[in-house]
Image (cartoon, rainbow over all chains, first blue to last red):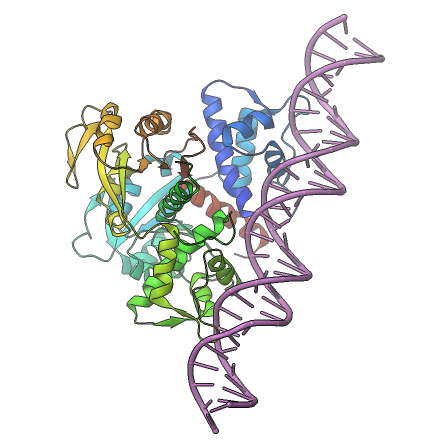
Length: 217
Length: 217
DNA sequence: GTGGCATAGTGAAATTTTTAACAATATCTT
DNA sequence: AAGATATTGTTAAAAATTTCACTATGCCAC
């Protein structure tokens, strides 16, 4: 665990660090060895100071007059985020979205290994998806005790999200990513993140409406 | 278009309005007719003042001493966001995620109708998914001129995101929701939203690491 | 080794966003 | 119809976040 100079780190900073990693990986692939905060900022669409400030929460990674070594910075950020290990994940709710996540290679590539898939639909139980057998949700707590699982993904319909969350909590999970469009209750020491891309579509719809009103289009 | 009392509305407000709509719909289904900012705030996990403030950007929807009429407020917010109409959408990139979105009913339910699916992979072209034939991406501009399309969804791999964006821009699209983990360039009058749930997994991983360091777990 | 240059790190200022406090007002009770 | 009550809309304060401006420092040329 790297030393944290300040105790609380803004959520927005974490979100941007993820973007920095993404861009740094791109640069690495293109053979870029060193990057300045200004260049990285341009690539990420943010302010250079913001990058330096964000990084300052975790330590000093740059060389004055030179910039940041791409590989080193990327590794340092990943370590700061806790991505220098793999995370075992279970998924609850094998609908369209759940299936897509199970098949989507990006999770594994990023170090999140889906080790269990659960659903309460008898027609889905027993089905095999991406090498995983779908198991009855009620067996989740028992099953996950066998594995070392820290994160749960909820991809159920909204009305079953809380039940899925309860199973996950019972299993002693420490973090939840909830794709269902519903708030869920969890103790404060369990980290809950909400994902709902409909919000982004709403945002775009709103922006278009605004732009039209302003006569920009 | 409702009157906007202030010209600039925070992005965060728009994002929360989407949550309010979600919760209001839940309440409507449960037969709740009236709700106070406090009750709605609890349901959404935000501060009551925040709700009143957010709504104030668009007008006055409540009744002092009473609260908000659930149905009316929901409709008013949807109108404010530009959701009182349907939006035609095209999707570029028919991978796992693209397929899931095509099959996922939630887009249509929310008023976003996918009217075209595009991909550059010859093996995918001609395939039919959810009643749509996959068309070669290069034909996108010509095809979308036939339809009235305002929003494009990008679900290609990151290295093809910009090309997809270029096709969309050529087609005169006014807003883009980009699921590919890559920044894209677009003129400022085109609204671009980025969706990447890996960020949320990163966030959860970071929070868990932090909580562990703090000894909360 | 000295000077010049480039750029990170940082403290302060500016901005934005959130929260609190309160005045305004609609409804209900008597 | 007057007063009590509840809860909005709004103003002001507080908090958080972002940006600016500057200082510190490492590298390179000479």
